[in-house]
Figure 1: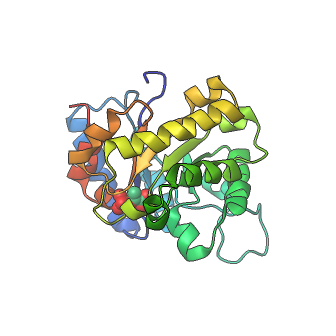
Figure 2 (figure 1 turned 90 degrees about the horizontal axis):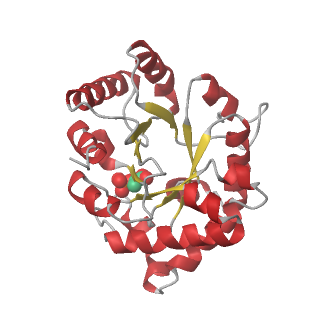
Figure 3 (figure 1 turned 60 degrees about the vertical axis):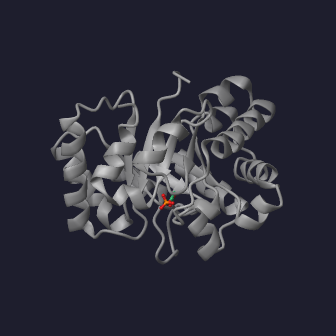
Length: 259
Ligand code: PEP
């Protein structure tokens, strides 16, 4: 869909200190510049660990990069006695555009549920960040054929109580848990099935206009070689990329899927 600018977002997870982050980002920027990458046509974002973000900001601003950046998580609180947490306003102050919310690794290792994801979305939006809301089923759910229902339920829970004009601003990422970090990429048809179901749900519960404008990404072992097929699907508007985003040539290749 031409109205939705594709987004390629690199989730670095807990990799790269701030020195390594600057190196990788500089190389990525040079590589994309070499290819005369049109960032209006395909948006490129990186999601470094919190400790890298200040350095990333300095580099992006100093070199006037068109690569945007964000964080991998955000607190559901505004400020105060929440040791170890990072607030949405702190991220906004660092120039973050995006923040992942409800990544499957947060759900799995930190017990995050849809209610918490909902609170984090509210805080992110209030601070002017664009949440990238992650949903996706595990292998058992997939084997039982319940993946569509599962993801739609996660969307309902995560978006509960949000106004249409808030939902319009979100990015959603469908990431089947069995495909994350496993090398097991979903087929383009698998990605399309769930992304389309999520869009239909937004059409029913919010409005056709909002459903039509929300970007829905696919994530799970995306590589340069698989990006084109996934991006050819009508309801897939980009990729959330983990492992491959740590390799400049791979990630640049994913961003350049139209070549
Ligand atoms: C992710 O962490 O969001 C992800 C999709 O990881 P990978 O690409 O490594 O499967």
